[in-house]
Length: 537
Image (cartoon, rainbow, N blue to C red):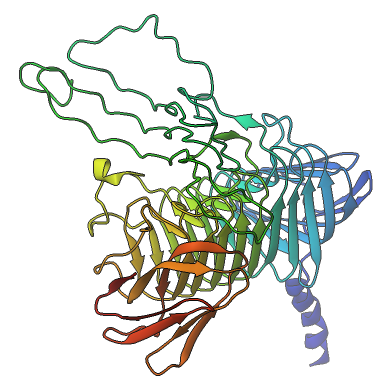
């Protein structure tokens, strides 16, 4: 019996004490590497810069990183999957991503249990050769672990986390901050002036009109500004120009029968327009102050397109948050907090995002299925979904019709979406696509076109909801929600003031036919939910 136990013990230990394939210990200007996996793996060390290239496809490469360096970097190029564990790591890069993942498969980034880790990027001047983010990934990444990960981007043009594919976050305590300026604006974007575009006008000297009608147009820039200069970062000044139009489909010709494929012949009808971005701003807006000061007014601006914008978390795929605590703060106008081009999904955890621009942004559906979300924008929408069809969907889509894919869906959890910019910036902006409410607690603060922000319909509001028009939000002053028996259901406190907010409210406590009361220090309104969606003036 004893021999069997002694023989089995090494096997048991080996199954639970698997050593990492590669360990890296940073120490100032140097890095010490211990490499166990050598077949198909090449490691190059130069000072505190470590370059790993792995050809493994059937084995997940495991890497353990620790130590501190004020000028170090890990470049990881993998053919297969990899797992990078951070164990009390404090790594700063003076140029380029401190964690540069040139991966072809998903990489897991794990903060070891009970540890605090920090990745910092201070410069992103050479964006062509050095990845402009503290964490840059070519493929999918999973950020997880029971530790803390601080992601800090201080340099101009530096993002916090950037991936070309999906980003998933779970369990982790993740803190992302960016503080740099953008490196510049892309050509032909409309700016803080009148005229077309932000660059030089295109050369039309060789333009020839094709037979049968006008050709496809590219997007227009901004129309001339009226009454003063508009400024995207402050949204002050006059009408700063209409946004870029999506490409026109081409105006058909006149005379004879129209042919849709060639655009020759008669007047075949106007094509669908692409989406509008946003407007430049009418008149003077309220001057933006420090955090907590009052917003409001009619100052609103369109979207600028920046070179290396300093966003917090940005993915060309989806951003999914399953659990953990995620805090994101950006500091520059135009720098969204969390952006997922293919969508943003929150299934759980606590998510707190603050940005001068959109706190949460997507070009597809944004879903809130659980957890607690506080999305706050100082100068734009708190949560902004820009689905296909875009702004002014009456031209190219369906205005809140049931057969259109939804822009924002709330099924559970708590969603506080707060824009302190004033009209027309909103708490939840759907660009006229459907807003679906199936559950959860919702309280938004913002404006809207003519005090009407994006709202659900009686069909898309599966859980009863109400729009409170004209409520004054006062900094640190609670807003109370009571039922008909004067039972307190919710208490919400915003860290800023906003006059005449249009606030969308929904609660699992809401029932059709019941009466509810909203109270603040100087406001009280009682309403009855006679429909799934009720506007309260």
